[in-house]
Image 1: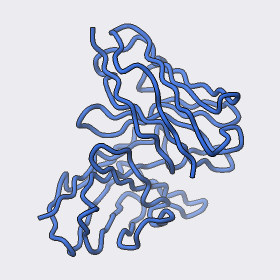
Image 2: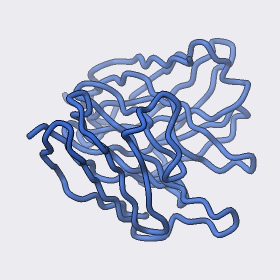
Image 3: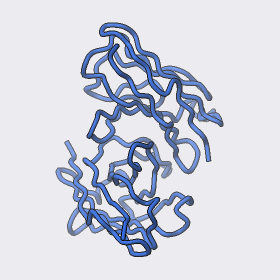
Image 4: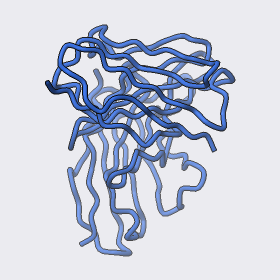
Length: 123
Length: 113
């Protein structure tokens, strides 16, 4: 069973960059599937942020207005998320997840999730 | 973006009784090319990450108890828990993955009456 574990700072100052990493165990991220970040503001619902294919192709939610970058590090079997110019509204639990994809590259559902990490944006 | 609206926001059900959660999408998530509905359901217990229950609207994920079932097509979907157990207390989310960006419903909280 694949396992995912998020890591990163719990507190980030406004206007700075939030950087998170998801370490994947028991599955090689370069083999198949796609790899995603989803966030959940305190007491609220889920918002998809970005997905990267095992090939390196990337997909982003335009709602974050180009502040986001997702990347793969196959040598460490992990993937990362950067969110630039953070504001208070970026405060959330950030989850990494494995996303099932179609043969033509369509993004489907999330079949494995990390435990999540709370990131607070505050000075 | 496609808006996913769940109803009710919360419900209280007695142990052993049926729980029904509805999910309505603002646009159809049925692909005519393969007659598949691009909809999933997740369960999130307090303090935990979401867990996949159902995908393709009605396909149960491996290991998910058969008291969980999904139905519906097009824009209207239902998650049913046939006999509620204590461990089913959670928030349930629907997700559409047909339109970009993929979007989630606001969640339905299920409690024991």
